Image (cartoon, rainbow, N blue to C red; front, side, top):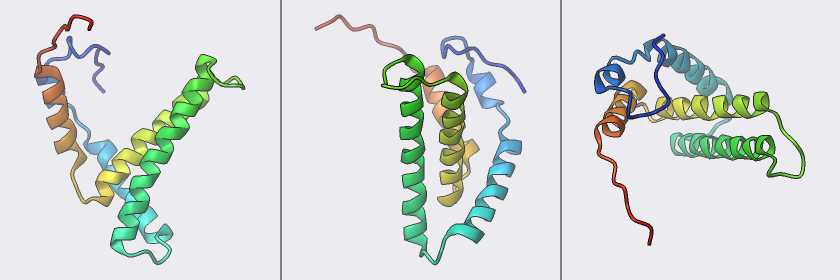
Length: 127
């Protein structure tokens, strides 16, 4: 897998465009099918999509909770490993949402990366 700099200024559009997510998407599709087959619990399509959207937000909330603990902003301390595990849940649930919406994540991720790496940045004076 190709490594990228954390700064969008150093990532070229060519590098973003050539990003290969197909193996990851394949795994997500397999997991998504398994989840849909075994945990919809009689929900109709709209209810299933709603539930999956809420999972994305729930996982984001769990990540920010662990981030706060890791940074010392909460009553109890956290650790980096728990924070990163929650971040992985955010990525996985987001990818599963693409599956639930019957969309190709690679198309949307590449489109968004193109926008990020090609847009100009504005330096604004403080108000």
